Every structure is written in structure tokens, then in C-alpha cells.
Length: 452
Image (cartoon, rainbow, N blue to C red; front, side, top):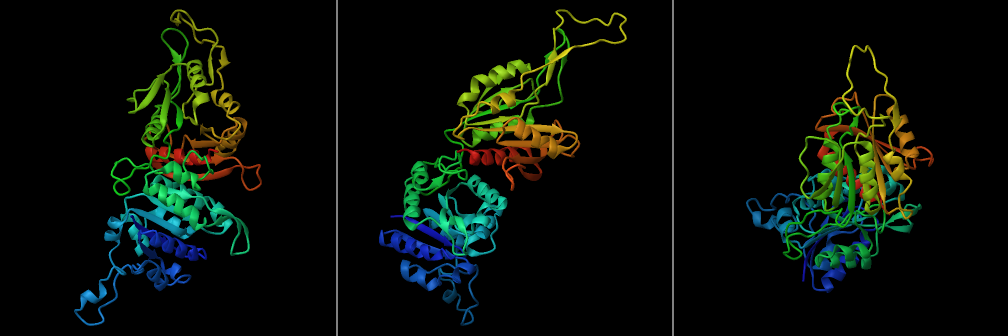
């Protein structure tokens, strides 16, 4: 039988947590409930203590001793110790998880008993959102859920229906039976079963919102875990510049170093994906565990992408592909020979992003992300590219923005996705300066959530 920590936050759905506590206790598990102050307004700590036979955790610190010096009277498990509870548990379930609780978990806060316990816990964990439909659909909540998935949480999708506030839509906490099925799967180390019970993994098989956790230690339900939200997915990334020859000596190119694309490929592999990296000429080392296809020209890159695209679940076009090539490469070095000028005729290269956008799977299981480096009208130009190339995401940055140009280890991006408030304009998010590896992981988790 397992040790289960049940976190309960402020929501009308807290009464369902009573069913969970009772069912798990009757099944022979030992259950300890951790309540937030808001949760106590809906269900008293005494209720959970009566159902589980374990003192309900409520206070971050014990009250002052009723009898001076009588420390033992105020050091019961009801008041301490979140670290010991975290080490004791085989599974952590937060149900219901309010929008506030999800935001606090995503931020890594530790200013109450539940948040502190969450931060100290290292085992499998299940998050069960419950809130108003508009709060659930808010981009801030979606971002916070993405972050939680990146931290290894399995997120159980909320149900749709009439809500306590009077609205109708997604936001109802799943029924206890669904939560119990997902919890049992996690205790057995089975993420696929957890998804079948209503949770989503990052490939979006159930919804556009989820990611699983993967046990890697082989030590049963307790022990270290790692988040592999891209496990089982094929990720295709393009990176670096292309070079278009003028003659055997010279070529046309750009200033791309490939750092962003290589960060994406390395991060995708770390998150569990099978990765193909189509790379233009760069001086970077190949990321570990990544299949690298080295190319030179835009035509070379197009052929490599066309070979790999059909099998890709996520494609990220981060390469700076030359738009034009010389019409007729000189067979010998072009000599100056007293010339004051030279005229070159350029012809268009294949539009690899548009080609891919026109060939995505119809079922939504294949997502495409493009990049755009701009020097003016950033959002306007990016929005045109998002729509014109049929992308699921467009990541744009301004060459003149400090920390966002070529050859930097950081980036500042604006992320566009289709379907804004009027379904004509895109969703637009401005992300602050961050390391390219951190940005890569955040983008990949968001793309995984868009699948399906």
C-alpha cells in the first residue's frame, strides 16, 4: 500500500477531495491531507482528519506552546514537517488545484505548507485543475500549466459542464474515479495509463494541454523522477545559415551561428524526443543523442527537410535560409580584372517553411514552428508569415533588440499563434530576455501542447 499526499486548495470542488481521501484510505493506503487556508473555508481540517486518521496539515509553523517550554505539545505532524512529509510520500496529488495554486507551483513559491511540501517533493505528482472556464482559458494559466508539466507534473484535464459560478465550459474538476485511476497508474509507473484516465501528455493525444512524467530510476513509485514530455515524438529542427556559391571561392550567406537551433535540438533530446537536426555550416558541436544532417545550400536543406518532414511530430525551422541563389554559378573564380562593378542575377530558393506548412497532417498531430528575424514592424511582419506559411507558431525577434541578435547566447522573442480573440488576429506573447536553452525548452513544451 502507498503513502499518498493529497493537497487541497480553495475551490468549491474541495468536497470531491473528501471522496478521494476516503476511497484511498478504505483501499488500504495511508493518506495525509495538506490544506491551504482557502481550502479550509470549504472543508474543515477535522473532516479530512476523520476520514484518513491522519492529522491534516494546515500550518507552516506550530503555534506558540500553550505551556511555556512544552515544545512537544506543539510539534505534531499536523503542523510540521513539510520536508518529512515530502520524503514520506509515494505520490503527490493536488485536487482541486485552483488557478492560484497552479501559478504558485509554477513560480516555485514556498510560503505555506502545501507550496513548501510541493517544492520539497521529488516523486510522481498529479495536478487536477478546477476553476472558472475563463480563468482556465487565460494565457497565464495555460503558461503556468506548461511550466508545471516541464517540472514533471501529470496534468489531468478538467471536465466541461455547468460551473458553480454559473458559467458553462471547461473547468470542472474530474470525478474522483478518474483521479483514482490516474493516480494508480502513476503509482505503478505507467504514464500511458495515466493519460488514458484523462490526463494528457505533451504530444496532445487527449488535449492540447498536457505532458507526462517518466520514471527513470527503476526504484518503484518513490525516488527521483525526470520529465520526458517529448518521449516517443519525432522532432525535426533546422539550424544555422545556408551558403549559396557565386564561384568556387565565394558565396552568399548571413550572420547566423546556429545557436538557437542547436539549443532546440539539444533540449528536445533531453526532453525525450528522437531528434533530427538539419544544420547549415556552423562551428558548433553536434548535440548528444541527435541525428545531424549537414547541408550547405538552401536546396540541400530543402531536400533534407523533405526527407524527414513526414515523420516529424514537431518541426521547428530555426535556420536562416537564404532567400535567393545565384542563377548560374561561375565554374572558375570570378576575377576583378579591372572591373568597377559586377552584376549578379539571383533567383528564389525553395520556401521550405511554406512547403512544410502546406503538407502538415490534417489531424493536427503535426505542428510547425517558424522563426522570423526582423528589423522593422516586428509583429505585423510576423503575423503575415504565421498566416502565409500556415504555421502553428511563429517566433519573432528584432535584430536590433539588445540580447536578441545573431551569435548571442540569449534571445528576446515575440511568440505568435493563430486564433486570437476575433479568430482573425493571432495570439501575441512577448517573452523577456532569457538564455537560449531555457527559451528552447519553453518553446518545445508549448509546441507539444499544441499537438492534437
